[in-house]
Length: 163
Figure 1 (cartoon, one colour):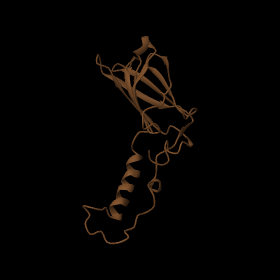
Figure 2 (tube, rainbow, N blue to C red):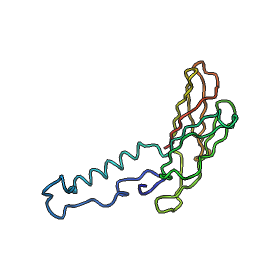
Figure 3 (tube, rainbow, N blue to C red):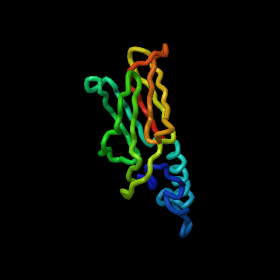
Figure 4 (tube, rainbow, N blue to C red):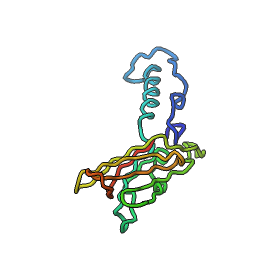
């Protein structure tokens, strides 16, 4: 895990600016400081665009109680943690509740705040539109509301991404 999770790491999380101790004679056999610095810079930049959580949620599982069929969490790179808690508020209305802190790579609890979220609906029967909103009064909660092409609320499997 990169330094600073569950927050997005910046360039300094990947170490100091590297310097060559001597000229690199064969870049196929050893990387130059310029290459290592470029990799660190690109990793830091890319991590700003990668979701910290990806969840696939199916509200029809478990006799209508819903279930997470897939999740990938930045702070749980081994995939051994618990599923993100959720509540079905009604038809097409799902809340995902994140903890206030998650452990970083050193198991130090680090504050988690939802900065943005997005959802995509999946339904074989019809075209489904999913919209998300992050509740301002609860920075650890994402609410997903699902509607069909006519705008009527409906249940559907959703893919939720959280930054």
